[in-house]
Amino acid sequence: MLEAETLTAEAFAPFGDVLEANGAPSRLINDGACGRWHDLAAMEFSDGQAGISLFRAQIRSLPYLFDLVERHPEGSQAFIPMEHVPFLVIVGPDKNGRPDTPRAFVTRPGQAINLHRGTWHGVLTPIAGSGLFAVIDRIGPGANLEEYRYDSPFTVTLADGRADGR
Image 1: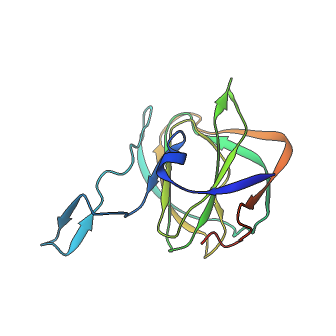
Image 2: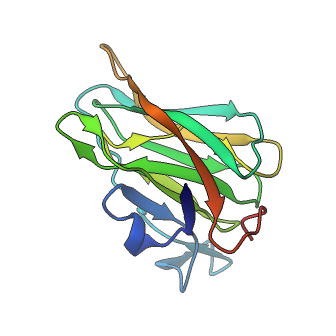
């Protein structure tokens, strides 16, 4: 059993960056009518360039059963929901080239994530809304996807028993 934690910048730091408009903006722009939270993620690529794509993923429900994780050794990957809804994030540290025990997080509406280059992670797992995301990742030559299946699946639940992540 794997209980999903609330996503915080501190807890997620080993795996990537939490992107959210939280607290005071870095600066005001547009004659003071717009707050800018500047440079929230370090996009990292071995080569190639940043590309922006749209993904529409199947909505999942909790408890959620999974055994497949993947990583992208050549570049980081940011997931930005196109709606103000939570989603499930599954990540795991690397142990000798394979994923170790995973952790699960549930975002708050308005949060997005950037996964560090080479971070093991589950598939895109929306738990509400339409499943539409903007994804910023590396576009370039060579293999940038490794997949791994755990011998036994994990079941993700929420620590407080809620299924909506709010």
